[in-house]
Image (cartoon, rainbow, N blue to C red; front, side, top):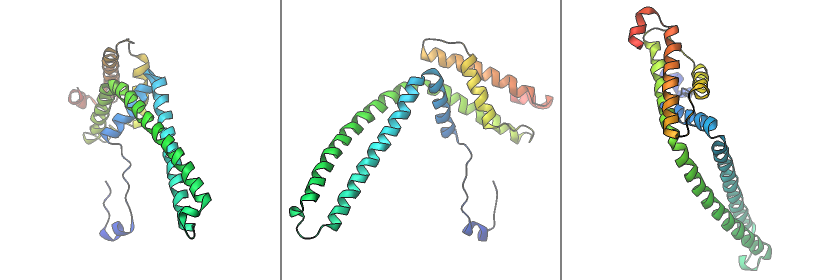
Length: 197
């Protein structure tokens, strides 16, 4: 972590882009679900996009109504165009509200299915931070997130398949843990191998 003088800190905003445990866990969960249940991950992505679009449309309607109300002159009840726009906006808003409620229900169902794969994502996240902490032992032991993710995806593809989700998660965890162990031990000095084991 860089340290700057107070004068510099006043003029500059520091952004920390390092990965954290929960962020990496969510990223790994997306990878696992994308490989194991691609239709589920696609549905989740489409749902997020459609909900954002619906909320944007709803916001635009609200802005349009506020603009018309601000521009109207005289009695609001006698302005025919405003009344027509308000009526259309109400119908559209009600339709969007129903669709958003349905989408949120569907998202809850998708998330509950995705949560079955969380143990694999959690263990992957935990292992990454164990490996990244090796840099404290010796600066030679630095591993990139990209390398780790590649190894994680290889573990998903090469581990033993299973119909049961819990068994599949165990198979992936076992295979990936051993694969990571072998790859890390290959790059460790002899004095550090026992420490890592």
